[in-house]
Image 1: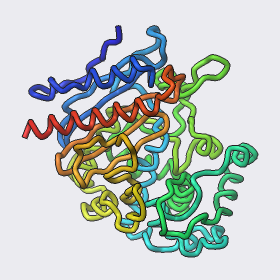
Image 2 (image 1 turned 45 degrees about the horizontal axis):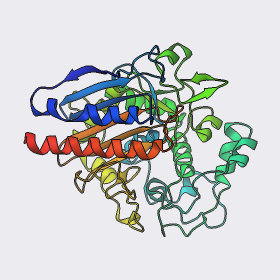
Image 3 (image 1 turned 90 degrees about the horizontal axis):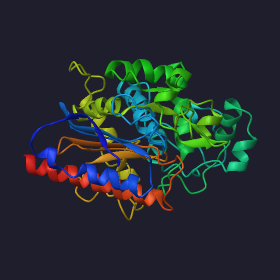
Length: 377
């Protein structure tokens, strides 16, 4: 029998929310061996639990909100890269409507002159989603990867449609590095993670933390934990604008509270101005060129999904992001509410449709949290 492990549980109606049955259904249906769920408001955590184990073996460590490290995959785009860009925009060092080539002179192929920083953030650059696997495998390390991405040209006219692309955020990561004058991981650690108290959020977790990491694959039958799963980020050496970040449920809750507080540190001092944070988290008119709606670096509602990871009840100003490994964060600012679900769906799923199951779990949790929030007011 799979028992949820409780870190902190608020009192009142929230205790009756059907979170356990929703998360445990994903384990029973074989989508993931374990999970962490955190629900909260800007000033408190109202629900935080770990479910199951790091692997399908009951002898492996249990998942815990404050200690289990998850490979965030594309959630890196929002937590690290977008926040770094937001800080640089707020300080006047990065301009959204400046062509990318101004920051990256090597990005000068046919059709690239009209691609702006804003287009990278909204996935409207026209670049393809990623480098094909054979091309990626043939590249010899980070420098070769960057040269290949800088040589890319748009496949559709810039600004004409939303095409979700890892290449956009590889370029953004490089822009942040050049504008800040230091590697991406060093900048976000000093300017984002440290001020917000995210002590367990990092690229390249050291080997001593591998036992705490939820594995995302198998190598010769052995779980692979603490090594980035995303092939593009792996080719970049584990640090990339598109993926590579590891974190815990508790750390991501602190990050979500930063968003709901309007951009302030825990002590109330501003990390970014409220106006800049609203700009980045508000649905972008420039990205309303198809069914997949975007803010700057974030996904907006309605999502282009048959079963939305934001559920059916989150408000029109909600924003969030997901990761291929099985991670997600959704924020409803009008309800002062966030929902974090971290799983390692990428690890040996027993379901034939783990991604579909995970979407149903995500949406069910968002709806449950919204119902509780509405009833608690």
